[in-house]
Image 1: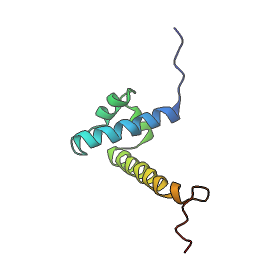
Image 2 (image 1 turned 30 degrees about the vertical axis):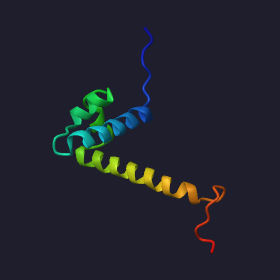
Image 3 (image 1 turned 90 degrees about the vertical axis):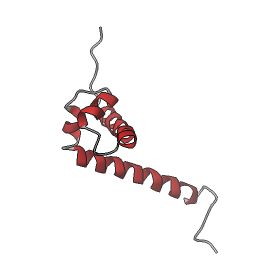
Image 4 (image 1 turned 90 degrees about the horizontal axis):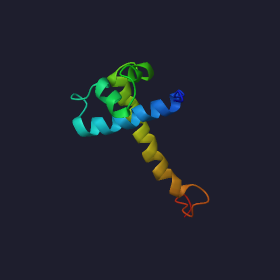
Length: 88
C-alpha cells in the first residue's frame, strides 16, 4: 500500500468546497466544522487547522464565491474577449 501524500492546497480546496455545499444545504447555524470535515473527507481537526473557526471558514467561502462572481463578470469585458464597454 502506497502512503498518501499530503497536499495542503488540495485539502484546503476540498474543505472550502465542502463548506460551501454544507452551508448551502443546512445553513450556517446547523453546520459544524465536523460536518464539513466529513463532507470534505478530511480529518475532523483539519478545517480548524486552516480556518480558526466556523466564522472564518464561512468568510472564506463568501470571499471565494465573490471572487468567482467577479471573475465571471470581468472575463467577457477584458481585452481580447470582444466586448469593450468603456468605448462609446
